[in-house]
Length: 116
Image 1 (cartoon, rainbow, N blue to C red):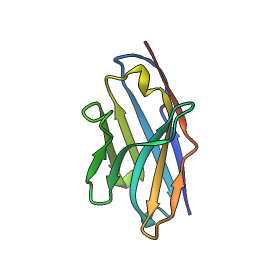
Image 2 (cartoon, one colour):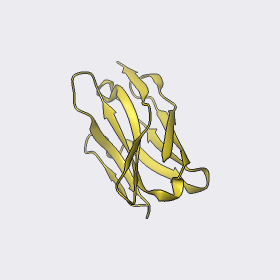
Image 3 (spheres, rainbow, N blue to C red):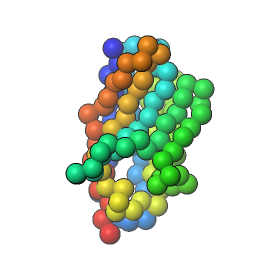
Image 4 (cartoon, one colour):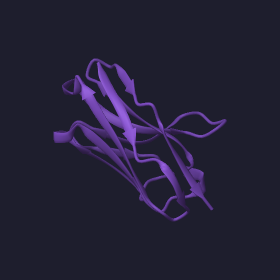
């Protein structure tokens, strides 16, 4: 089992920045890759950014160049640095860890609100 806790959401003006953190505990050795998703009211949850155990990263087109995903293996923590935020980035952000066996673990979500 893996437990995930997100930190760092909040209210920010358009053009501002936030850094989200996702701290993992439990069987962290089983994690293969980790990603961030977001969900706005009335919309499906969407993949925002992903980092593999080898360090490869992928981003949604809507955030590429503005968001950066990173990981600190020593702290079992993943980050999402969000710059140049836009009102359309407003959503609940979730981190997910995927184990080598294919199990998905989700955090509780953290609200990000970007005001215009």
